[in-house]
Image (tube, rainbow, N blue to C red):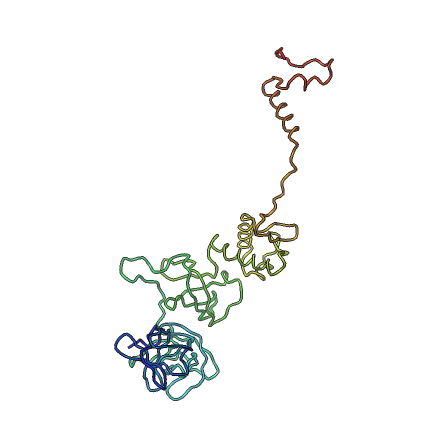
Length: 340
């Protein structure tokens, strides 16, 4: 049977009045209700569906997209509570069940909570607010002696789970705990939010420090694209640059001034922008940014200066007599007595 709580690609093998039957690749069939069937679906087509258990605990397929799947953390709303537990809205017809035994604190209708989805001992998809039962404090290798699955600088998926004095406690890739420090937060975030992040440091105790921006020059590339987009949206000019205060840069781009200057430097080097007195201007794609250079010196002056330098260096007048003796009465100052 296709494992409940996950997405599967299943083949349509049979049509009935109440829907389509899909082959679960293990000799069984899963029903896709008629109201869930995509238009123009035919026998033999392969559909991406989510499999879960209906109210009678029978496997059923849906083309709807739930807010979470098995072994993931999610922020869900409580829609009902009865004598057995609480029920959460996760985007499907059948609400997600949270037993009382899996509630860290009693849940109330209208409230939201962070939960982890798993299969109980009967094979049902249920949720728990006791995240510490499922999320690890330390990063561990899959096999002894192998490298850790995460390293400094790795891109990860974050779920903001809890506010602390140091910052925020976040779930990394639905598997590990990490800390996002206040000093690494440039814009407002909230509990329950999902963000893209990075591993700032795998500590000696194998715990994770996190950040929202890539380290060093790696973060200049995505920021440079944002700056270009901002320029395009503002008729090719932004009244910002190296001179702009840090709080203004953070307000518009949610990055440090150092990061902003790196991105500006990258765009300038690529001649995508030009620096002006009051800001930066977008250059045309077919014309490089104009670089200010000193005015060119006439060729005659360059030759004259070169000849003067040669005289000083060697003591030899290298100029033809007719160019030197503009006055016929003037005698050469050639101190070496060389013949003209």
